[in-house]
Structures are given as structure tokens and as C-alpha cells.
Image (tube, rainbow, N blue to C red; front, side):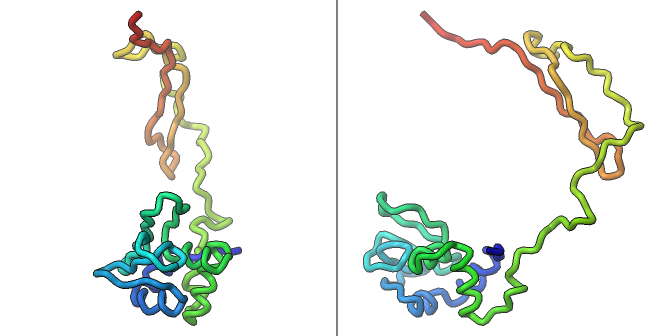
Length: 169
């Protein structure tokens, strides 16, 4: 199932979350900016706080499995997956599904990986070179990171050595 934009959907449903909770069959009461119920699925009680501003859930019952937001509470109440609950809410609200669909940030034509150009000079770092402050550690490898134009941005190095422990007998 396709993912939906969680943040955008939470922003939409929290605009009038109290009305929606009652429509979804939640039992509880409003106290300030919170809807209090027995758990994230809306049973009677007051150990679960649902923020009416953010839609995030905090359940003080130590036996309850964690629920991150009201969408997950709806999913558990209906016995469906998180994604199914999100899409059902979008459908019930009559919202444009394309507006809430997660769009891929990288297309097939563009790539986040830049190949290493052949003309970049190798750094003059011989393997085994001691660390400047910790001579027991020796250079064991290095990696070059390049800018999009192929120029060297920075180098990461790794030093390995014996670990010393301060054990007293």
C-alpha cells in the first residue's frame, strides 16, 4: 500500500480533532488542549492523552503498547494497518488523494550518487600513519567525499589501535 504524508494528514485532522474523535466513536472528555480516554483506541478512562493540537498520543498505562499518533489509534480501533487507516481517513474526509501521496524525492533520471572522477589526486596518507595525538592508533583507512562538481569536499579517516581499559585488581 502506498504511503501517505503523515505530517500533512495530522495537520489536517487536528484542525477539528475533537469533532472527529467523537465521530469515530471515541469515548472520553476534553480537558484543555487534550482529549482524555482509556487508551488510544478511545475506550472509557483517563490514562491516555491525545493532543488536540498535534494529534500525538501519550498513554500512561504501563501495559499499553505504544501508539505514536491518532492515526495509529484509529488503525488499532478498526483492526487495520497504519497506511490503510490514513487512506481511509483521507477518503472519509473527501480529500484529494494526490495531495497526500508521498512523492519520491529522487527520480530515475537523477541520482544522489556522484561517481568518483579519475583526475582527483589520492591523498598522501599512508596506511599505518600514527594518529597525531594518540600514537597507539594507526591509520587503517580513508574515504573521499566529493562535491557535485567532482571536487574533493573532505576526507574521512579511520584509526584503529589497541583499546586500553582501566581495570584495577
